[in-house]
Length: 128
Picture 1: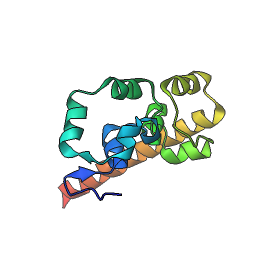
Picture 2: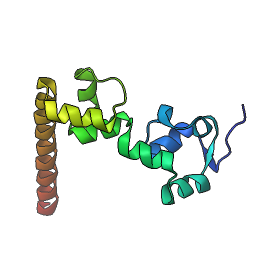
Picture 3: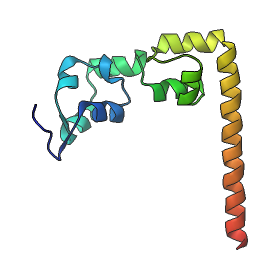
Picture 4: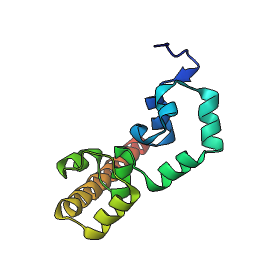
């Protein structure tokens, strides 16, 4: 196995930067280091496989969580331990299972609290 040089990255890193689920990418992408130039070319002019993956999935957990409006931990609590397609995400949003509704409410509360704390810290910084 050849070791990638400083100007290339592992396929997993490139997949993360492209926001795609690595096991769904073509074998050639999965098996070879990706140079920075190749990554830039993929971002600037995505091939059909990349366009299709971004549109239809399966999507990595961070994107699934974001599209559902929950945290990655909430996915695990909800029993979602695999990548989901856009269709599966849409179905969950339409079906609104109890766990998803509860996790979305919880996530929104966490975000509200983060905003409140940020505002409080900003006020304190102005006051000091």
